[in-house]
Length: 530
Ligand code: HEM
Ligand SMILES: *[C@@H]1O[C@H](CO)[C@@H](O)[C@H](O)[C@H]1NC(C)=O
Image (cartoon, rainbow, N blue to C red; front, side, top):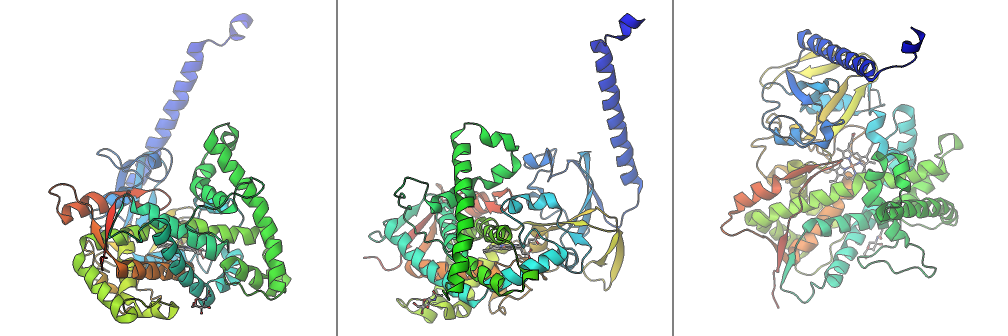
């Protein structure tokens, strides 16, 4: 007796594991049955794996499963019956509400500002790595950050963004050697737009002196700080999702990433001290970092942010404003390439406002509404901020508008911890808001009042994008300069029509933290050849 029980056989181990497995399957089936049998206000949409968690998030949509790009792939189907649906994963993950209605967006996105919905902590991890910040905070903590960060996003910053965009455009033409060319082939347009967007955050957000040319080596051989920032921008997502110990493996990318992080961390800490000194001595630099430090010094101590929070808010600009703006600009150029008619209309406005040679200044921003409109419309077609992620912090309700044509609303209870996702693709393709939503029609936005909430791709309400003006000022200035000098042309395959190009290139959408078009080439032809 004693002897045999002191040894556990493999068959016993397997039996126990099988029982546990069987039990978890039974539990899963039981839970699914409960969801299936509970009446819901919203249609239920069953899918094998939850598209935004492990392992479903690793996959793209295929014939049997909805992957992380499912909201794009099924943008014309998902909300046909109802603007809000309950997505029920069968094998793993919890049911969650997905909505294409911006009024529901308004209710849940206000996060921590008279709202029962908050951003789930796991959804802001990348943002968080450098310090608490305005995009991750909730409630009174968010208000505290908003008081300090808000003032940095004002006319002084936008003038600087405008000026720097102009300067960087000129450097680009010079350094890339376009000056002496009548035709320029750009193999990957995203390389250009990403570099521009990065340099704008680096110069106007961080206040670094970065240029289009590679940064010179430092005298002591240390990594140039502009370079460190670039490496961090490229590796930070990887770093937040990998287990910590992996970072210490002797892989060259890892080592470089770690070096860059360490270098920046020390540097930024020194910078906070330096900026405090600069502000005290009356230096009036307009970059966001310096203005933030200034508004922080002006606050009473109760409302002040600490150094790590200041740094966190500088970094949030890099993570929220770099890829997003770059992707929107790339898509804008893609649409310009195939819509010669619209390109000509926009160039006509540029010529009438600026003439052939005058340098634009920030006062021209509002006059170039057709340039802004192409940037807006491209961002609507592929909204870089593709989902608003929220969770119910309490048992609460949503006020749900009835379907189009029916007046009124209904009140729907939502249980604590329910995930509610505002599907920005769904919103931007919702026929309630747009005639022919699948068509690129910038004229929808001609003459739109500045910062109007009729435009929703930057979200709406108190937690809407703080960088909207930053992005649109940069976009408008860059596009005005580029389109005035160059005609943008597509690079078609043999026999390919422009419409076929659009489907192949601009419907080839990739989803990660942001939503973007896959890499593509364009061609530029000088409007006035030598
Ligand atoms: C085309 C470019 C951009 C798009 C489409 C975009 C989109 C968005 C969206 C949809 C949100 C709301 C996210 C949510 O509530 O879950 C957001 C928030 C935010 N964005 Fe942007 N963004 C862009 C560029 C920028 C830039 C350039 C900056 C900074 C320089 C920036 C800074 C922020 C910040 C700080 C927040 C958080 C605001 C808060 O929670 O109070 N964004 N953005
Ligand atoms: C932007 O450039 C204009 C014209 O060169 C100049 O007057 C203005 O001071 C600059 N503003 C900023 C914030 O750099």
